[in-house]
Length: 245
Image 1 (spheres, rainbow, N blue to C red):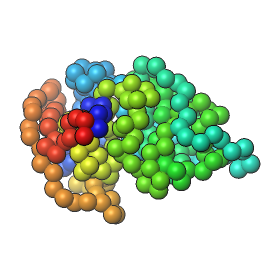
Image 2 (image 1 turned 90 degrees about the vertical axis):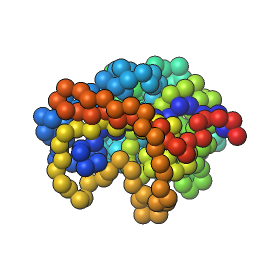
Image 3 (image 1 turned 180 degrees about the vertical axis):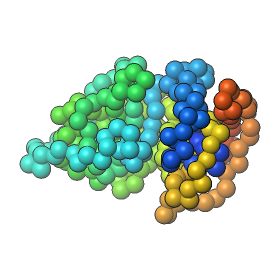
């Protein structure tokens, strides 16, 4: 399978958390700017064309747990993928298997505009697909009940021309891609702060039914920035490297 280059880019506390009270500190503010410089402003050399996140991460940052405005009496939509909005400079790819996110427009605003692509499964309802069509939000179908990540990464470059995609959480989605050999590099921006919480998510998590088979990494580089922020880059040793099967 030929696929885009996938790098997982996360901002964390010293104890590996990706969400929590530590994010309200001045120290994390400095690290957050470095995180965006590397990814959103393309100063890290990744030249990403889109970033990919899970449903909960999307709800926390962009849709804010709103209920989707569905028309349960909508006519049956055509089968298959819906692919308007090609050729944009940047996309936000949302993994939303069941079709639950309450989108109200077809783009997000974060360091500029990124146009939304929804990755759903066959269990997403007709009324949800109708909503996406009314909002002119592209969607691709990847999997029956659960996400078929490999299929998604086959469709995304074919339909939208992606060569480099950032994997941006949450931890369960990150670990799913790593376990399946679909992540080439891990980029961690470590803020010099921690809050000690045992309730908040970390960069990688198995979830309730996940696979905890260890995966090893090879350090590629380590850089220290002003404010004691550390940028670590690792090659993922089980990556299929996007090569043809």
